[in-house]
Structures are given as structure tokens and as C-alpha cells.
Amino acid sequence: MVEHGCLERSIYGSWAYPKHSKQLLRTTFNTSTAMAFKILVTGVTGGLGRSVLDTLLEHVPASSLAASSSNRSTAAILRNKGVEFRWVDYNVPESLQEAFKGVDKLFFVSTSEVNPEKRTKQHANVVEAAKAAGIKHVCPKYHSCYNVRRV
Image (cartoon, rainbow, N blue to C red; front, side, top):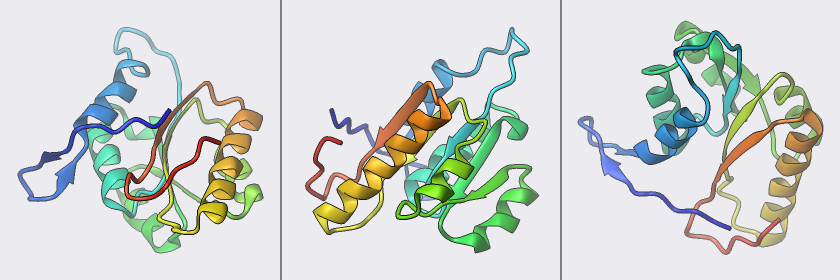
């Protein structure tokens, strides 16, 4: 099933997706416990991934977060915020397997690939890597302007 959330305009004028990050928070973070967990947010160079990561940083210790992108130049910015950077390429299953190690919850932002066959393969790579890594909670968010098929 594909879920589309509500968009809200932030004070900075960019679109934010508070519903998604709050949904992930409700199922992840309990301040009364000292459980260690790791949330990985993909696509942090885009608007949705960046918005979710910024919202999570307001509520979760940076040490509990990791962020991924295919753009390696983002790494320094994230490290300055105390967030671990993990490089991924949805076309390279090995990069996903490496990035997903030790992750408990995954916020998966789909690619902007317009070719349906390539896009389906990329999403299948993410799903297979998440299953192999033992990730127990995946929160997928798909770009609604493309024809998304169930993986």
C-alpha cells in the first residue's frame, strides 16, 4: 500500500512532512527507557528526507540517527550535526546492505527514477536489504507523481 501524508509549510517556506516523522517517533522513541536504537533516513539531500531528519533531530539524540544519500558531499554537513552518514546507491545492493547494518527503523524515501522497471528494481533492492539486515520497521514514502507498483 502506498501512503501519502499531509504537507505543511514550515516557517522557512519549505514543505515539511511532520506526520511522517511523528509517526516514526511514536513507534521508536520512548524517553522513559534507555533502549539503544538506530533510525536511518534515506534521501537526506532531498526535501522530504531532510525535513524528516531535521524533525527527528528535535526529538531524538543524534547518536540514534543515521542518514544516507548517494551524494557523498552531504557527509560533512551531517557529521557536524552529530549524525552518522552512510552512502547508498539503490542500484548497488551491497551499498544498501552495508548502510542497513545495525539499523532498527528505516525511513525509506523513494528515488526520482522515472523508468518504472528501474524504479521497481531499486525499491526491491531496498526491501531485500532491509529484510536481510533484520530491520523491523520500514516507513516507505514514495513520490506520488510516478506510477508506483507494489514490490
